[in-house]
Structure formats: structure tokens, C-alpha cells
Image 1 (cartoon, one colour):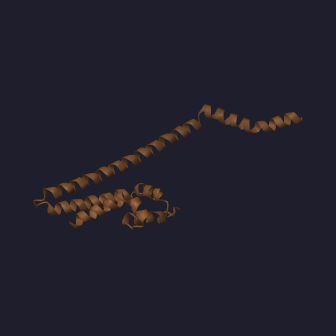
Image 2: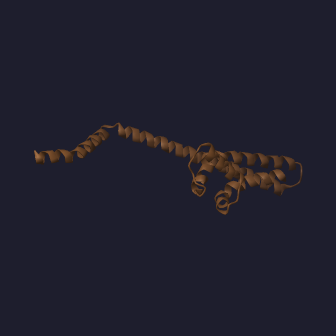
Image 3: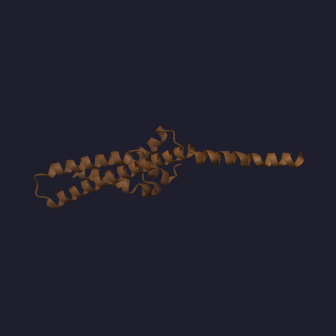
Length: 156
């Protein structure tokens, strides 16, 4: 029972992260995010809840905590394996599947974002090196120099 409770609490800390910060409730996930911020010398105020929430996922803390929750759920399942507690076993299995699904969704979202960033940087780099970009750059330079040139022709 203790293992199930620990797994459930790890999962709950992720679910209630924003609400816990607002209410001043200290949690292990909150501690880990604050430690990550300090360790990496990030300038994030205590009131920046949304940024802390994003860091919870992007820093790998959520993935680590979900892995730990799964291990605790599996441990509780192993303890009751031989007992006739089908409903309890079902609840444990549902929590394992929920944690695994959330891990997959997070990993997939991060990978998708990384791919989009790579594609956009390729587009930016290829546009910056294209003949059209060169033409745009030379037009900008000409336009910036135009007022000085036209002033010279008027006074000359």
C-alpha cells in the first residue's frame, strides 16, 4: 500500500504543480524545479508559475518522476500479485498506463518541437543565403543610404 501511495503522490505532484505553487504548498517536484533553476543560474522569479511549469517538463524532471511513479506502482503490484484483489490490481495497472502514456506524450511533444525548431532554422539559414535574400539585403542597404544621398544631391 505504501508503494502505491508514493507512486500516486509523485504523479499528483505533477498534476497539481501550478496549484501547489499558487497555494504555497511545497512539493518534491517544486523543490526539484527550484534546484534546477538555481543549479543553472536561471533568472526566474518565484511568481513566474508558467515558466516553472514549463521547466518541470523541459528539464526532464517530469519524465524522471513518472519513471519513479511507475516503479512504485509496479512494486505495489508485485506485493499483491498473489492476493485476490482484482480491482486494486486494475487501479494499479491503470495508473501505470496513465504514467506511461503521459511520458510518451511529453517525449513526443518535446521531439516535435525540436524538429520544428530545426526546420525553421534550416529555412531561415537557406533564406538568408538565397539570391532573393541578397537582393533584399542590398535593397535595405540602399534604402538606408538613400536619405544621405538625396540630401547630398539637393545641396550639391
